[in-house]
Image 1 (cartoon, rainbow, N blue to C red):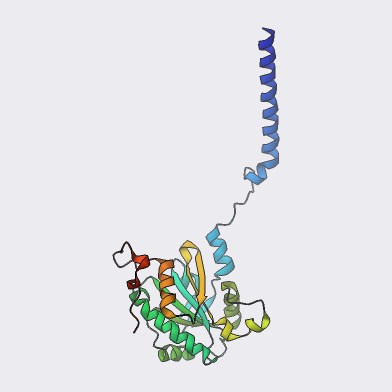
Image 2: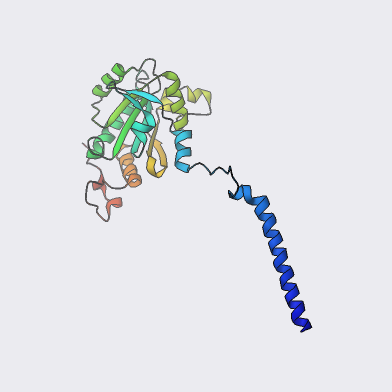
Length: 236
């Protein structure tokens, strides 16, 4: 009987000790665990990315329409984004011509009911007005689904830096050719973003984008779509 009593006493002591530790943990860790009033849940990752990197700045299209960058152009979309300065010749012409070829390679996926949108934002908004960008788009035979955008200089600069079209070296950061060398592509809903060279071989860029975005959702999926060159149009 004595052994049983000791066992019971030991068990009771451990239980009390455990309860005491639990009470201390609940009291001290409660604020960290969210059990206390006033606890703030972490910001959702998508909302944090939008706030930091996809500011909802106002812009104007080359057709003269007022838009908001996040709400109207990026939210829930697959997008291609680059920066241009139409007064930075010949670099801007070479890049735009390459992207025009890229648009043709992606066929109906850009424009109309396609699932990809293309945006070229000026890094020189003081000179690249909607009229200037409209003439530029016509010169390079841009098709529907590809917008050229400008806006207030401060807003455009905020957007450029938020999107990552910026360099630590001041000389590179002030060079429109360096800024225009980047083509960013992303799936906003899935929070997946990457970039490549805007002057890279257009077919290789197209294949990379298709590999990232997946096959055309309007076309029955070929089980081997990811290794088939038919996912992009033949070169003209």
